[in-house]
Each structure stands twice: as structure tokens, then as C-alpha cells.
Image (cartoon, rainbow, N blue to C red):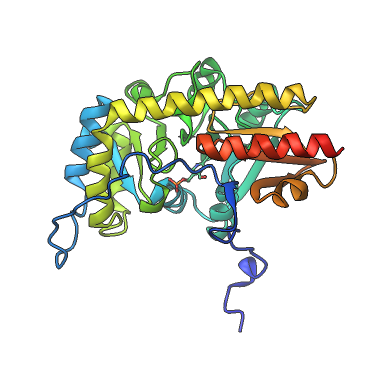
Amino acid sequence: MNVLKESLSHLKPYATLKRNEGIKLDSNEGENYLLQEGIHLDLPFERYPENHAETLKAAIAKTLGVDPAQLLTGNGSSEILEWVIKSVIGPGETILTVEPTFVMYKFYATIHACDYQAIPLNDDFSFPEEAFLKAIDALSPKLIILCSPNNPTGGLIDPDLIRTILQKAPGLVVLDEAYIEFATTQPTFIHDVKDYPNLLVTRTFSKAYGLASIRLGYAVGSRELIEPLTRTKTPYNVNALSQAIGVKAIQKQPHVKTYIKSVIDRRDALKKDLEAYGYHVYPSAANFLFMRSPYEGFIDDVRARGILIRPFPLDEMYVRISIGSESDIAAFKDALKEINHDL
Ligand SMILES: Cc1ncc(COP(=O)(O)O)c(C=O)c1O
């Protein structure tokens, strides 16, 4: 029996691949480098966790140099994205973003019956500045979602343009910084929330911290923005284990920085290798590369060698390759060598 309401009857679930199917370069996960020795958690398991994750927020705030009252924490940054959409946008009100971008924006917008408007990126996947600014005037969106670096393309939005959008926006602007740690040329906007009360920056432990399994994300905004959003929070939304692991993880900044640098180095080296095969790879500031599929069947050829990469069928086929561990990327490079030898 399809119990979903009419507007959702055709909604497709978020697609994930089977685990342990091969070398996973399809989901932009990191490596488990922070908790290699496991973790001993001495917790009062019979108690509910801290509802507002005060200890975790204090640790994040100290590391980032923000006030704990400027933070939200969530069951992944995905939860925070849905939390904001369901709290801010009434049925039929407009969310403005670009396409292609992170698929969950549209998913949540559909569930909450929002008017979802996505301006196509330029042909080279750069941000469509003029069309976007025009769309703000024309649509007066209640919420703008910007993703920088963007998933799946890896591109950045120019900081000056982000500021222009923040000034022009009639409502809230969410800046999704899930991958910002891997951007070498662009600073985070978490410290700009003091100048822009309409800015909420979302971040995650799933990428640079290599902790996708614990489902932990956070957002930074001005106190005036965070206070009302806190009122619509699901009680105890971040479980005690994730809160405790998050506290330990955020305190390991030297390890985090070393890991980030290793990913950036592997990404930039892999881009050069792919380009040497004549592949068309887009500039990426994230922990993945995005490129035009070099020929039909490329993804299957890679998969036949035990490596999963993510297909993106747009006007033509594109692929997104996560920057996995050194050995995973070495295996991918071997696969490329073989494939190019066979051609
Ligand atoms: C752009 C972007 N934002 C947010 C997320 C969600 O991350 P999480 O819910 O694991 O924090 C992802 C995950 O892939 C993403 O690509």
C-alpha cells in the first residue's frame, strides 16, 4: 500500500550502493584516520544525551573561534538542511539554488512542498552569476542554498559574489560548506555570520574528519538566527556516542590538517594523471574530481576492475571520483592504465 500523500507518491529514495562491493570512490567519504585504535566511551548509556549538545558545542566553538550560542548540531548536516527547510519555508514558498548540486536539497524541498527553483550552472559548471542575481529579483526566494565547493562539480563560488548574494537576499542564505576544508583558495564564511544575520553556514564531520558513520554535522549562524531555529529542533537529535566522538575528533586538529593536505595532494596529482590521458576534468576544491566520461562504458570498465565511481548523467555522462586512500587511488590509477592500454 502506497501510503504517501499524492505529491510524494513518485519520490525516489536517496540511492546508496551496497557496502563492501569494491573500492568505494563513489560517496566522497574520508578515511578512518582519527579513530584507528577504536575508542573507549565511558558514557551513562541509560540516560538521554545532552539535548543541546553543550559539551560538543563548547569544543567546536573553541576550535573554530566562535560562540557556542552561534551553533546548531545535527544528525549529519543533512538533518540541519531539512530542519531549516521545514522551519523556514511554508508550502509553496521558494527555495533558490543551482543545478546540478547536492540532491538532498530538492529531496527535502519536495517532502516539504516547497517551490524549488534551480538555475543551471554555466556550460563549464561555473556559477551562473548573472542569471542567479536576476532570479533573486524575480523570485524573491525565502531561502537560498549555496554549495561551495559544489557537489558534484567541485567548483567554488567567488566570495565577493557570496557577499553580493547575502546583501541582495530577501531571506535566509544557507551556505553548505561540507567540503570547504579541501578548498585551498577560499576561506570559510563561518566568521562572516557577525556581518550577515541572514547567513547560516553548514559543516560536517563526514568528509575532512572521515567520520561519515557517526552522522554529525553543525551549523554556524548569528545568535539571532540560531535562537529561533533551536526552538524547532527534534529533542536529543544527536546521540551521545556521536557527541562524545565529535568532541574527541575536533580536538585532533593537527591530524585533521595532515589528512586534508594528503587528500589535496592526491586530488591534484590524480587530476594531472587524468588530464594526461586526455580526459576533461573540472577544477575541484573538494575531496573528489568531476569529469566528463571519456567514452561510453568507462564507468563499467572501472567497475569491472573492482572500483566504484559515481555516474552523473546530465546532457551527457559525467563521473565523480572520490579521493580515497593512497592505496585506493593507486588501484584506480592501475585500472586507468589497464583501460587505456586496452583501448
Ligand atoms: C554538499 C553536501 N552537503 C551535505 C552533505 C551531507 O553530509 P552529512 O549529512 O553526512 O553531514 C553532503 C554529503 O555528501 C554533501 O555532499
